[in-house]
Length: 326
Image (cartoon, rainbow, N blue to C red; front, side):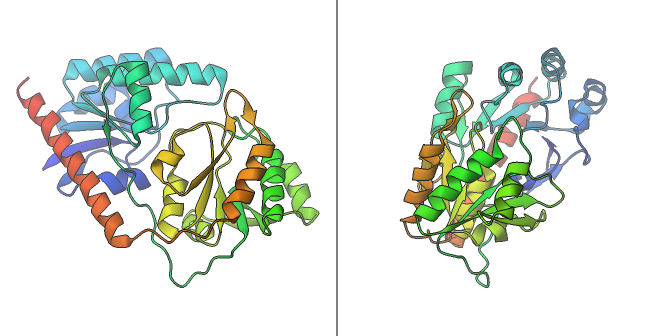
């Protein structure tokens, strides 16, 4: 059995792609201890493959470069899955690019989720990527209904990714009303709510609904249309949940969301030009004119997930075998 250290140790995507027969090495906790050079040096012999997904953004550029050099010096096979190619904040964006350069320069195998992302990785970093479909993350609940015309968007306090939540809510709400529907803002339990959004809820312009960590799929299934509000990003896990449960997606132009799933309507929103509210209003209205997608076929999604796991197993076996010859 191959011993695999994943960074992060566990999340929905990591759990979905871990192949049968692979032994998860390490322990929960953030940041991952595998990102500590001393810990990595002491435990390099305990692992056959190190798979880096996310969770290294807290490191400085030189720290991550030193870490990558340590991985290479120790001969630990590194596999990298590129989930996100950009960041919204100017200073952080430069650091994010440098982080990717460091880890992609060391990785033995690079994986990503869409052909467009693979093309960008090749153009920017000179690396060829294996493109794998994003695996299923949710199951449609046949006992839970959905409301035609109901538009939902997940919003909290202002952030670099969503600097003006109220502007997103206003534009999405306008599209919902023009399409004969209404707007619901989904708020993670315990999160702050933007004052502008709260004022709109108080005025009856939208509905606020809190949800817990295990309730997101159900809340998305209740919708006709789900809006992704971030002005930066490359791929989306929420989109995959919507595909699983049968909810159409309105997604920003910053990423490759339409490559993930055909049932996507795109609007203008990116880290350079920001939100075009007219575009968002039109996209929501157009999405509501289309019928609700059918939930993903479970047999097909399970076959897809199994195929993704097989590729991971093959990649792990290959890089581990290469290490044994060093």
